[in-house]
Image (tube, rainbow, N blue to C red):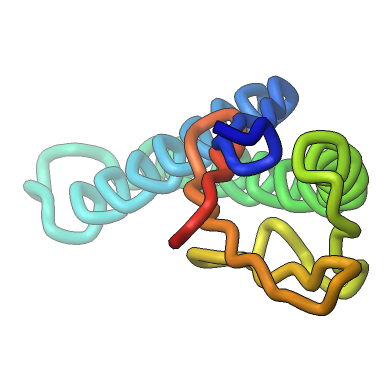
Length: 136
C-alpha cells in the first residue's frame, strides 16, 4: 500500500498537562456547589460563615484554574496547528490548507493535490493527539 495513503498519529504531549488543570477546575467548581447547597439548605445548627468562606475559596480556585487553562490553551493552539501541518505534509506529501484550525476540525479535512484531485482525510481526536486516516 502507498505510504501516503496510510493513517498516522500526531501526538501532543503538552495537552495532558492542561487536561489535568481542567479536571481540577471542575472538581473545585463541584465542591463550590456542594458547599453552597449545604450552606443554604443545611441544618440551622451548623454555623454558616465558615462554609461560605470555604465555598468562596473553592470558587476562586475554580475560576483561577479555568482562566489559566484557557490562556495556556490559546497559546498552545498555534503550536498544535503548526506541528500538525508539518506532520500532515510530511506523511501525505500534500499541502496542508492554511486556513484550517485543527482544534475546530470535527471529522475530516479535504486536501487538494497538485493534479487537481481532492483527498479526504478523517481526523479523530484523542487525549493527547490526533489520529489521521484516509477516507475512501
